Amino acid sequence: MIFATTGTQLPFDRMIRILDEVAPLLDEEIVAQVHRGAYRPQHIKTVDFLPPDEFEQLFGRARLIVAHAGMGTILSALQAGKPIIIFPRVAALGEHRNEHQRATAAKMREQRLAYVAHDTEELRRLLLVKELQPLCGIGGTADEELILSITNYIEHDE
Amino acid sequence: MLTMRTKIIATASIGGHWKQLLRITRPMEERYEIVYASTHAGCATMVGKNRFYLMPDFNRNNAWRIVDSFLRAMRMMCKERPAAVITTGAAPGLVCLMVAWLMRCKTIWIDSIANAERLSASGRMARRFASRVYTQWPDLAQGGVCYAGTVMGREQKN
Image 1: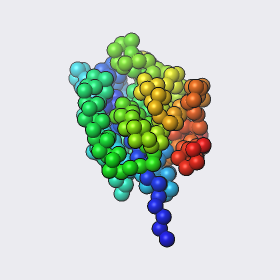
Image 2: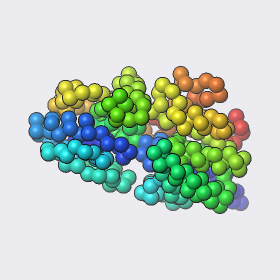
Image 3: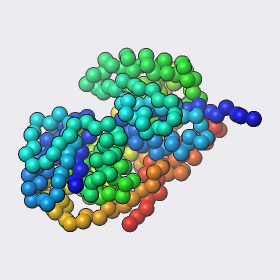
Image 4: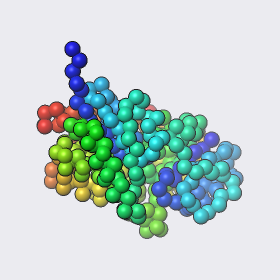
């Protein structure tokens, strides 16, 4: 199963439309968490907002994650050791307030943490790769250095 | 003899902000008594037996809700009297920091890892009154903004 999510704040019809177009070419179910989109997909199953526990459950079942460049989903995928394709929102198309998703996606690609697609062709090509492998995995906690710095500040003002 | 552990409030909006926060504060739970606050009741299921407060969510499109947010943050802070408040954003976390600043607590803002090119709008506001501001990108650590690693944790490359 491929799990796609657009986050829970803004609609992202462009991504859902592309997934819907690609879905008939795939031999695999796509479940998408969609937020207030106007586009009605024909070939993929959609769900609305999911509470964190149900989200994790669906996430756990997925072979591959496709998502806008939201850090929550990216962190979940890396922690679960699942491959993720980031499809960033473009503010110039009215998909977000600013272009930070494109910057996030570029950084994730640069650091070889995630696959990135910007259009139908790129997304289709990645979706059609059999057994796309995760690029990276992470543990469950932040860098020790960051935690130490914060506790030092709390306890010693340093 | 039992000693009182330092009490910390950790707060963030649901989604990526919340996930980043937990990666930082869950490892601190042995050291501190951590009280959590977020914008969705479902988040309570992710913090075990720690006390949890529900905060109203808002953004620039429904900014009037800041009043409710401020009052609830005030009530929580008066009841808990923490030594420090930690937040990874977004706007509701900023409100908690403001209240904490009024009460002369230590106030720690950790800008989301999604902001790779510029501190977030909330982060730029937080700089005016947070006693400690972290970015997760070394290039953005200037003018009093600290960098001490990220929420990613040690990467386990495949």
